Length: 560
Ligand code: FAD
Ligand code: MLT
Ligand code: ZN
Image (cartoon, rainbow, N blue to C red; front, side, top):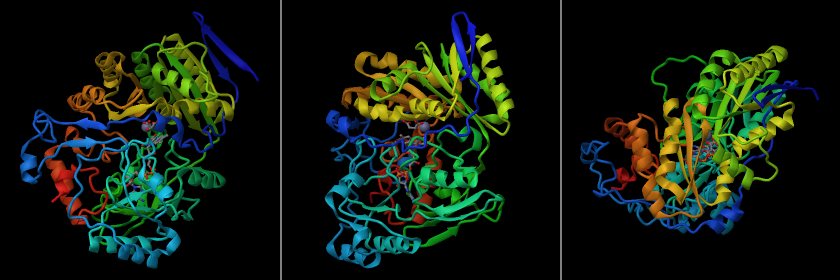
């Protein structure tokens, strides 16, 4: 194995000589680590009681919206595992009875109507073990027709439902708040068509992202999105959350790559919008309503998505930087110098690195000494020699300019996987470390690390504050890790983080959605008029409010 070492004031960059054919781990990287976390979890829940009793902050939000929409305001409790008391169950919803269960068994067959306690326990609990519902029933439809029949019936009975995919969501959107019926589309997992000329893939919503990637690999294509939860999350869940992930910088968001979809609305209507065309300007492009609406407007049953040719040369560099300004400058330089081959620009700070090293087995820091920040730069192109030389030259130049203090290019797939494991493993390490308050912010790149520093100052020894994320997309994952959930800590974090973000014209949800966690916080990022229009659209498509209640929009809007 040939290694090229470049030294500069005692620091070095190691350049491997082999380009990588593919660089991401192919394993299911979302193994639910139930042990540890549950034991640590002694949550009193997460409590935010606005001083005036209103769900909005009066400095930031227009009070008129609440009057216009006739909202009566409740205390907000975004709970941990047990406390749901401050969100009230909508009394207009029916409760499940034995006739309902019999009806579902008639249309789905006994085995796809789940009443088993253990399976329900899992389906009622989110990936972080932070949100927990008490549904007594999970339905597993096998096709669109069955989804339609289920919804038509639930709508007529006013039974609330929660659509569920791989249940890897991080904002409590995929689990019931109370007794909503869970509709999991996991059995709808067929690839329906693949066009090798256009690269358009048509599949059912329950296909696991990694399975689609494996299928495409045999055809010489890749999915336009990739995320740490790929081994469990569904494409329908990805579309419904408008998941971003690690490749967005190169291939754009799902609003661009999803060419069509099929969705079933609350009354059972099947909307066939499963186009496969790049261009189609015939009227309103309604598929966009379902991309990112977190199951609040309909259940996505099929997806048509533009995939990308798999290119022969993938390189991955793991780089250390001494300060955030250098990371920022490196991003600007990477866009300018690696432009057409840049396929990921991810970052983590030293606290995140330490957490991964402490909580995940077999992980080590690829660079020799610990630094304040680490960057992963991936390039994807079609010219092995040129692409690698380009990346090496870029790193050398960055080293000379003092932007980089150390770095290494992966020399084979295993090394690349081990680099990705560090970045992709942070979520799992956080889960193992105890309680975690997660924030997913879009901010101007120059502001991104200021909020991390501010919060560190604010919280002192109370918690460990971490910053990582998709720097190339201006997306910070601000995570606060503590031994256990506690209200004092939460009171110091919220609404501070939301106010800070709003003041800098950022978004309080870059890619994870609002779920139940941030349904009441939407006004920090959207105007009252916009939210009012969203509520009208919701009421038009789901007049009885049965689809994923208490999520996305302030739940008090729909409680009467
Ligand atoms: P679920 O969690 O089951 O559901 C998420 C939401 O979508 C819920 O509101 C649910 O009601 C709705 N929904 C699910 N399926 C449907 C459907 N068929 N029709 C209508 N509504 C539906 N997210 C990112 O954006 N980028 C990342 O890089 C990323 N990395 C992650 C890494 C880890 C380790 C984990 C645990 C999560 C990560 N996530 C990330 C969050 C999560 O994986 C994504 O939001 C993902 O898209 C959720 O897909 P899912 O199938 O698990 O959906
Ligand atoms: C990530 O980028 O790692 C995911 O969005 C998950 C997280 O925020 O922890
Ligand atoms: Zn992310």
